[in-house]
Image (cartoon, rainbow, N blue to C red; front, top):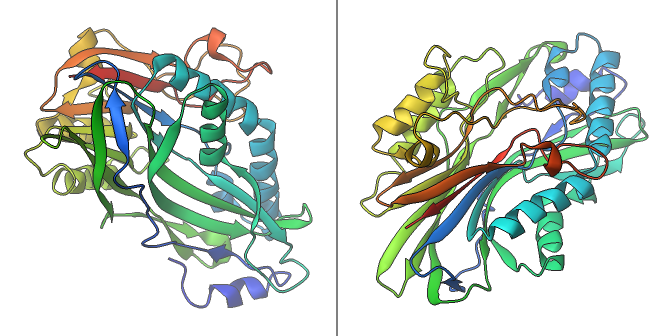
Length: 371
């Protein structure tokens, strides 16, 4: 978190204010909601990083206040240029086509604007420009697919000054959404759990006298109970990404995950962007992948396809690259106690692009059928 004197630090720079809102204990769930599985005992699950539409590194590398403001301007403008409404429509089409029962989402962000703090007193930015989760659920409903967000885990919530005439606020979130209108046996969602990792990535902003802030990460889980007898746990997470590919923090988070949400005897599915390259043991980030596998979890893709390689990350920041630039596999469905019937990657083909020629996200999604 930022030190108490951060406002004073920034107050010397055009009276701007730089606020970090870490929203705690606001994870929520719709309980006692009935679900049914149209494939009998089979469940189709999916993980998808929605991509919040920008690269945040410019905030950290700026060396002057003007560069800092330019980085905020760029982040907001780039987000708009990646056309969230269009992209989320494409992702909704992928979810609808797969008829996924449970979807773990990363970067289900909210972008808001508010009065500029460059010329006046700062107030929280509350004008919602894009709520990625709400938009996605609305797009699914227009496709006749009724999903409900049963769990939402807030992450980084930061408000920044810009030269655009307003402050920009980005709220990061992970979420789990579940189908409501399936066909056969009834399920109930129970036992919401959420936890922040004890190990977090702390960034120093040199421009702000090395002020520190924490990129909050954690996990959220639900238990899905079938016929009041069979219970399966579903966990969603987004582990730390280090720009220098140092796996120390992400691997510590993976160990915490195994010792918390993963410490159970019931069948468990972990969905997420783990920022760990599964395809190269020489990549330092591969350590995190090996840690999860060492926790007696199976990689659904490998179970279904053996040594066949797949790629899930990452397209260009503006999503305009003509050909896919996916080069690593960061996104996984990890399974313990269930059989994997199939697995596939979606959003990685040119045919998946939006009408404007954008990739749906900088990450491809992963879908697996389990039993």
